[in-house]
Amino acid sequence: MKKTLFVCNFLILSLAIEAAELVGTGKNGMVVTADSLATAVGVEILKKGGNAVDAAIAVNFAMAVTYPEAGNIGGGGFMAIRFDDATETLDYREKAPMKATRDMYLDSDGFVDKRKSRYGILAAGVPGAVAGNYAAWEKYGTLKWNELIQPAIDFAKFGFTMDGHFAAILNGYQKLFEMDIMALSAFQPLDSVWRAGNVLVQPELAWTLEKIAENGRDGFYEGEVAKRIVRDSERLDGLFSLEDFSRYEAIWRKPISVTYENWQIYSMPPPSSGGICVIQLLNFAQLFPLEKWGFQSANHVHFTVESQRRVFADRSQHLGDSDFWNVPVSSLVNESYAKQLKQQFKYVATPSSEVLPNSMESLSDESEETTHFSIMDKWGNAVSNTTTINGWFGCGVVVADCGFFLNNEMDDFSAKPGVPNQFGLIGAEANAIEPEKRMLSSMSPTIATNGTETLVIGSPGGSTIITTVFQVLQNYIGFGMSLEEAVQSPRFHSQWLPDRIDIEEGFPKEIQWELQLRGHSLNSRKLGQANCIVLKADGTMIGIADRRRGGGFAKGF
Ligand code: DON
Image 1: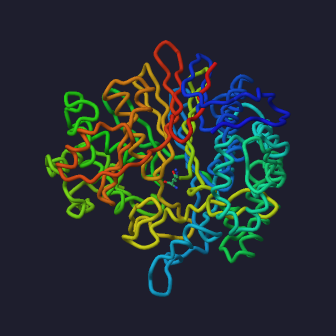
Image 2 (image 1 turned 90 degrees about the vertical axis):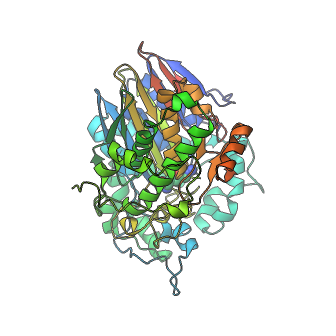
Image 3 (image 1 turned 180 degrees about the vertical axis):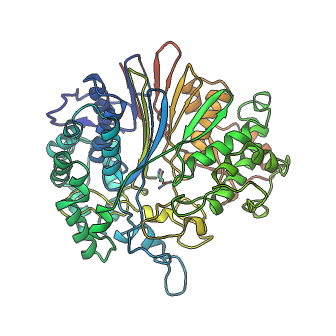
């Protein structure tokens, strides 16, 4: 997405940021995001002496203004942080309101009312974004909190000039905005349609951001902003209470970790399924002679798809918020489990109807829209951050007098066992709705290191996040590609159900035929937007912005 700044106290940018910038190099810092203004903000913070976490916070808030289709303060996400050679993760996922009930999306005949779980206030979880950024700042921040929010305030107050891509997105979503008078008044074009060159000013959002800048976490979860959200929720027959907000906490969690070809991989634990699933796929990958078979050979794709079929089947049964459900993490990520399942694989496709989630009893017991950015500072500290309001513009509700969209993350719960959500994902008891539970996610911010190089990886894309992150890791580490090739090569995705392989344009035709002969059905699709960084042994950082979705912005210095 390409945008230009109109007026801003913080930065005076050239009005000529025209094209995506897919490759950046530098030794002092690197920022890779989906938005040109956000990348510029991140670089500016690093240049001022801020660290990767400072820059990540400023980028997150800037994107809440300049990329409102996914950037947010009304949603949530996950951050993987590598600081002084230790990696941890921060969970700022939304949670179900205290008044939420297990069957809240079922109609009187017991069918899931998909409109209810996707549109309008009932689709929204309690947002975690402000608490998450504040927790990250309390632990690692070095610049002043309000200094990190100021660029976002300036963008909201003085406006920025939109490019054609963003104008088209706003035009495309007018029907959604029409469902909510506040969304319509915030994003209705002055003329009949939005055009490149129009300036978007968001004064209500600027007010909200000022409250957050003044009062930190409490600026959102206590006081006037929380009151306005709850007032709106009451107006729209929603479930939010002030207590939902005062009780919200971001949670530091130990990453899921595995060794893959001499690399240590760190990824997001539950309530994300991402880390577990990515690591399961890496475990499978190590059981096949993929290098011998070659990248995008029929065997490479076929056996990866057979692995994905099992991994997503298990996801449907066993994964949910581990604070509410006993997720068998170590059984699932154990290499011996992959070895056991591999015995079922044949050279032809196993119909997904014949693949059931494993009972786990045989194993040891144990206690379109999202955005991803990667940042690294001159000390080698890194942030991998994926954040979302789920669907583009979330549930379509803008909080009155606050100017931001609420998420529709409640659709990531399993509203009814076996009924797919908007990403076609199926769930069961583990991911059933409960008050204050976090809905299962696929977001997989990941950091990997082999001692001399460090990789920072992640992607948006619902269920395809998992397979995108896995493939970038496999391409770079397993197939030995450059990071650019690893990110830009055509990808494929499968997820057990629906029983098909999604493939991107550019996938060799003869391989497609062979896969069909082996019993796979194919579907064409674009997959993810992986914005990644690698720190090379000589201290050079290479940032790669994904070419997909209009291309991102990688900038190093
Ligand atoms: O948390 C999840 O898995 C989803 N809510 C993410 C949604 C998403 O990536 C949409 N983006 N393209």
